[in-house]
Image (tube, rainbow, N blue to C red; front, side, top):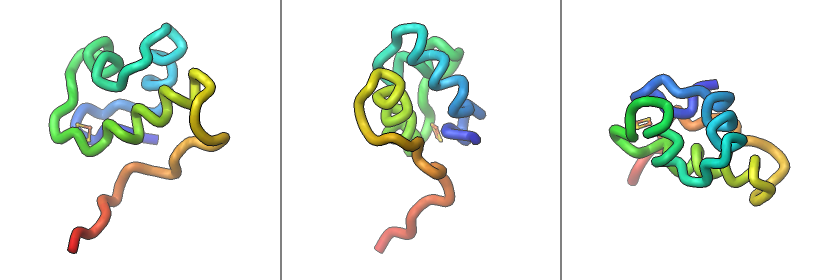
Length: 71
Ligand code: FES
């Protein structure tokens, strides 16, 4: 599943970055090639990283998009 639509980063790529020792979503993006653009995915990416490192719940978030309606 895609976590970052702007950069086309998938959950597996984010998890691989976490397994390599990265603990920060922004650093994971930098290591993958491009930093965040809109930034709407950062919380979900950080959640994936935290789960790899043993923090957070047992399941990955279902999806990042569609974005929530505001208002
Ligand atoms: S969806 Fe990841 S930076 Fe926009």
